[in-house]
Length: 263
Length: 263
Image (cartoon, rainbow over all chains, first blue to last red; front, side):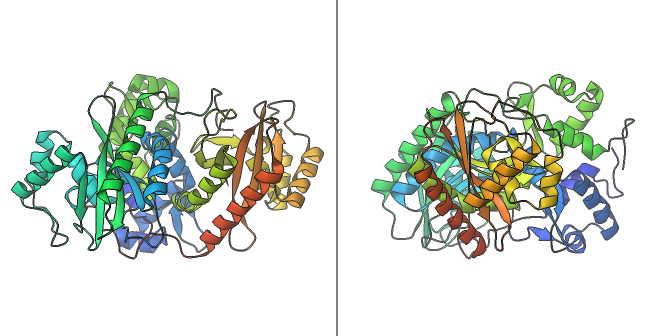
């Protein structure tokens, strides 16, 4: 495959371009994009033209480029992420209605917590999660739940690393973290105040797939001091059971008809 | 850029591979994939290896490959589709709670209706919409709404084509279609029984962006004979107004903190 002088493959450079966009930078000029990804302007321009040709990027009204709807379509249509979030959404709404706090669904990907859905509550705690955003595994309640139910080798691997201390409450010392994980497995939930953002508490439970494998974490984010664990944990566990059940049964594909192929 | 003998660019062949996956074929062996996309096995294998390297594809437990979570992340993080559906979701839930029928949100892309969110209702009408699935513009209520509020040149273009007649109720004759579109603009909603699936009625309203541009269609799908337009249309229009208002104001990004960059 055509490699650049730096040895990166064409695909890896195309991915670097796509990866430069996020909710804070959803549109950029080609020169801003070139600076951001550290690829020379002429090369960036050539890569952008290819991505525009395939509609993975689109031009916007301000002369910049942004991610194309076509990219979202390609990524979503056959994705298990789309399936999981569609199955989980009604149960998340139940939690959201009862607990009335930010509610998120996340999974483990490349040793980070990747958020695949969130329902927000205005005027509640600061919520730094974003759909398709990531948080470090040791610094959020969902991550700790996902870690607590991971295979021992994976836990050893994470605990063997230098972990970032985001606040005074972030647990980074291996022995203390092991005790925290053991406690989470014993209780079946994590409740951790201020380990990444002060004054907010994350409460999370595991979502099991058929068998005992944990596939996701269901979480609420509440202002510090407003945790009502006796109410919140049963609500979360009930919804997590519902998601597991729905995952195990026939997927709610919503009808027997096949959709006509793209027209 | 390295082109294949057929003249397709490498990126276009990679997109062809990704495009082969959908909810009915979310996992395939490389040979099944090769047959499906019509690319020789050795070439398919080489393309798949590249996609696996970048985690745009993943191996699954059964020896096949499937879309990678990384692809979903790239496509979702900076996408206006993600923003729009997150803003619209609470309003869709309101409609869903009141009308208790399948509720969808869609937009126009490449002259098709692309569904970006749906909330399903068990035991209701057949629902052939899928998240990231497409339907033809002239054969669903959402498409007719999006067409009715499109620029005249675009309408002329669509009406000038050979349109597929899916059922006896699909309107394909240009003059009749023009009358249908005029009626939709006059009433502010579309209500069309059985134009793509018998025994179901689609009811849709436009969602306006700042100014007068229609950005999306909000729709419910009900069993034929159970349309209660006097109740449904006001519910849809109220929710569509809510979405427009939310789009015009500051995006509900859910907090002031920046998320730490990928760790």
